[in-house]
Amino acid sequence: MASEVREMTDGLRQQVPAAAPKGAYGVWPTDKDGNTIGYSAEALPNPALPEAVDIYFGILPGHIPPQDQSDLQASVSQVLNVAKKLYLPENAQPLPAFRLVYTRLFRIAQLGLEGDAAPAIAKAGLDRLTQDLIDAEGGRVKNLHLAQLGARAAWLAAIFAAVYLLLCASAGNLLLRAIGVDAQTARSFMMLWVGCFGGVWMSYAIRTTTFTLRDLVITDADRLQPLVRLIFAGLLTMALGLVLTLGWADLKLGQISLAAFIKNPTEGLLFGLFCGVSELLLPGMVSQRASDVLSKLR
Image 1: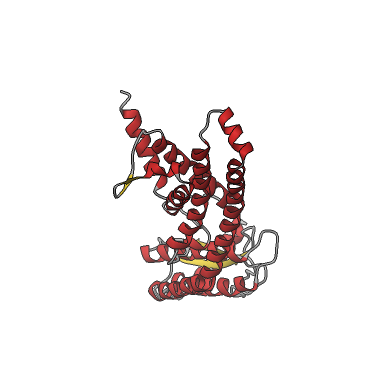
Image 2 (image 1 turned 60 degrees about the vertical axis):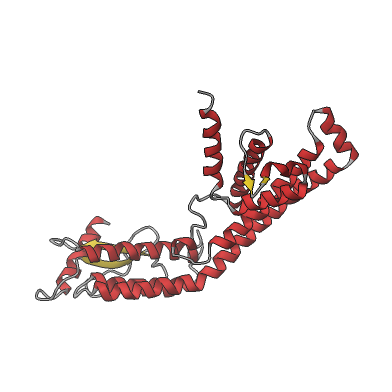
């Protein structure tokens, strides 16, 4: 492979007129294992080959890439990685859309990195391709994630709603009294969880109104899976509810203390909904309350 790459870069270098401003790179299609495809002294690189799924960027001997070419190479690689995650299923044939994106990316790389390079023009073409990719896939990605998150939220909410109904029955009240737990408080906490799950689902829909390239493959910055996110947000909401219930801290909405949710399951549902919608703020809020409590123990 190393000798093949050296031969390839030497061949590319010979194709560039000595008097012309040269790009610092040699660009060639590669397969999934990183092997160059279709290389020969006479052949030109062909991104339309079915096995071409990656791009080799070789720095030509004696060249140091200028900043604009280096930035363009990194940006092309970023867009290609996103396209592979969207259109290149593992152990399967690439989806038809992949070949179109890959071919455009390859030609953009050639324009901006090889021969009489024009990185500024190539960057404009890459920006257009990136926006086309976002326009084509943004809605599908968002709705798919909302469906997955909503399905798990509904499943978890149904469990806690069933427990709530059980606690409303006489048998549930007897059980709670036996372990020293107030039935009304327990019911409010069940509704707190239900509201939180609905709020987390709403939170993603609200905050992802403008997509970036990164959003197509990473749904959230913390990289939590939907089920983990729901449980994590629920635990934080319950922790905040316990802090309020025990009187370790107090939060007020106007003149009304949020601790009053324990007396009314409907208020618990609404409080949980607000906590879920504000899920990204919950870790900092709970951490701050815990620090406030522990600081008083010194």
